[in-house]
Image: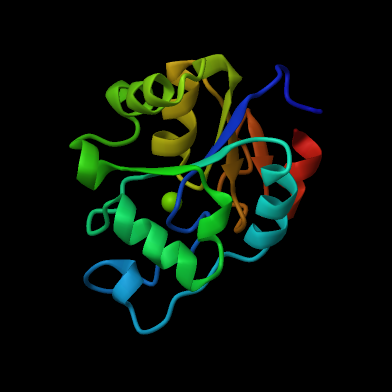
Length: 161
Ligand SMILES: [Mg+2]
């Protein structure tokens, strides 16, 4: 465990963290082609044996049901206990109300949650400001100066926790 504190749950961003966002119109679950992010399955297989996993997404066209349908198309849906979507809740990352909704509904302490995502402000700084732990998924090395935990492949996640 490389993280500074123990965790009870891992929360993933969806677009460009778990599944590739091709930027098409409408909900991803209806797109002609869907694709998991490289390394996602291996990471989820390893982490799901140890922690409950959640999705927290700001995806504008998809509520939890559509997100789960898209995840099912690439065989990842079964790894997740629940999906939290801005479209359903009315607010998204980095709004504290979004993180509060997840923690209160799931009975989780913020400090014992790990947020993983590719957006440095919404996913990572938002979660950190709320008191969660966070890892920046940065496959294109876009943020080499980021002061926190950063991974270039999801395969690195299991070793972090
Ligand atoms: Mg994203």
